[in-house]
Image 1 (cartoon, rainbow, N blue to C red):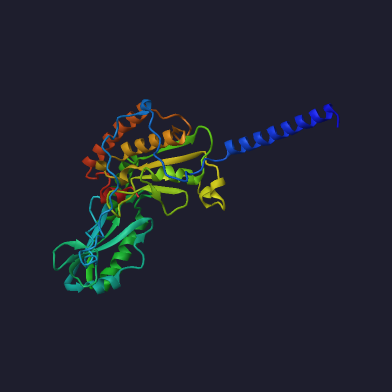
Image 2: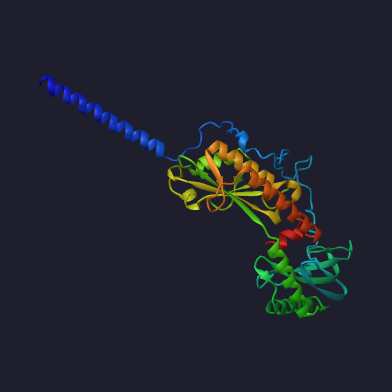
Length: 353
C-alpha cells in the first residue's frame, strides 16, 4: 500500500468515527431526559420569576387513623355527620310512629344513591343524640328525611328527576312505615335553575401548562421532580396529586401528562413535551392557599426541568399574570363565602362536582 492509499484509509477511518460519534451525540441529545439515579436538590427558581405569593407553605399532613398505645386503632369508627342542607338540597321530611332501627332503615334504602345525575340521600334523626345522620346499624331513629341535590356540574335538577325523587323517597317511607311530605315541584325546579346559574358563573378550574424548552422529558423524569415537591402517584396513569391537609379531602393540585406514555412498555423512551398543573378551585379550602402553591410548583418545575409556563394555547404566563389571577380568586372566594358556600366546604364540594 502506497502512502496515498494509507492516507486515504486513515482519513476514511477518521470520518467514519466522526459520523458514529455525531450520531451517538445526536441520539443522546434527542433522548428524553431521564430520572436521576441519585436524588438531588431541585433547581433554584429564577429570582425574575418570583411572585411573592404564598411565602408560608404547609406540607401535606395526613390525619386520622392513628393507632392507640396498645397498637390498635380506636373503635368504633366515628359516625358520619349529616350532609343534607336546604341550601343545595330538596328535603322531604318523613314522619314515623315510634322508632325504627338502623338495620331496618339500611334494608329499606334504595340500591342506588342517585336520581338521574343528582345524588340522593336519606338521613335519620338519632333517638340517642337528636342529630341527623346517615342510617347506621345499632342505632335507632325517630324520624327520617330524604333529599336530592338541586344542582351540580351536570346541570340543575329537572322535573323528571324531581318525580323520580318522589317515587324513591315514597318507597323508603313505605318500608319504614313513614309518611313523607314533599315541597312544591315547580318551586324547587326554579330554585335548582337559579342555583345552577349562580354556580356556572362562579365555577373555576385553573391550569398551567409546563412545556419543555429543549429536550423532552421521560415520565420518570417528571415524576421524580414532582415527587420532590410533595406530589404522589394518582390512581389514573399519567396523574399525580398533591394531597390535601386532611386524609379523605380532595387533592390540592393535580399534575397530569399523556397516560399512554405512562403505560408504554418502555416508559423511559417515551417523550413528553408538556405536563399540566390543575387546580379545581371550589374543592380546596382557601386557608390551604392552593393557587399560591400552584404558582410555587409551576415555578419550581419550570426551573428544575427547563420548562416554560404557558396557558393551554401556548401563551406565556408571567408573574404579573399570576398576580392578576390571584386577585380575581380572592373576589371569587368572597362571593362564595357570602353565599354560605365557602370553597372547600362539604356543600361547595358537592355543588361543584
